[in-house]
Length: 359
Image (tube, rainbow, N blue to C red; front, side, top):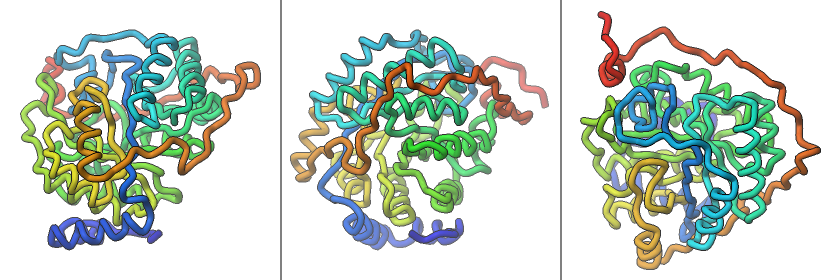
């Protein structure tokens, strides 16, 4: 894999003639992956709403009035039932999300560890997105049987400051580095259509490509604008932007799994087919992604049949983790890390939160 990518090199790839870009990406995809195999994942919100962050795109923020009802942490038995349902529908991975700023040691995190252990025993790859975590917490997740940890950079470092003001970009990097100190895979991607420029899209990929070990998977999300959020008036991006982003990611990160994530409800079958041709090798199935709409799994299977695609089995790229017995787990340290709270403000986020904007 090429190292030391420059942003300009990535922009040049993104901006080349569309068909040339797709052809190049498809060639790279076939050199490194089974082009007729797509991983089907299920995303489950195990704790919904009430997040203290001010992410401008997120309906789960407690700062905005979006109609999302807060829900307490899901019971382990309910998670197991959802995992069995996902497996029966063809998913090979269950991704569990909790609307937390960061993980805190205690009973709720212990419950999440039980969820990880349970889903791993069901025979699905287990991914979690829980916010910022310490090295000790990452280690405990690994010992419970976690396959992957998701923590998105969202955009370039420069544009990140236009989206989120309650945590620092460097905190995201530090969490990824904490995961890297274990054997857990990194899943980290971003969102396009938030008002960013092409150079911001390239900047995000530049950061990933130049990591010592790039993420094993990169989700590419199209913004789903939700009423009540600061980004409620953003127009949906064109499918051509999504295909270009998928294709560029595939070329820059040839070994990485590119995940076609949020926004598929606005994509035609032909548009999704272009994305698969350009290197997307994973989708999320189910009627919603955390709190936003998603295509029905039966519709996805119909599209797979049309295109001659088949779902990928679990643990093809990495063997199944072994869950340690509880009594052999690393003990919690009761840490209270001081994650950053930047001083800058985002005017549109403050307006939507109902707080006074001070000039």
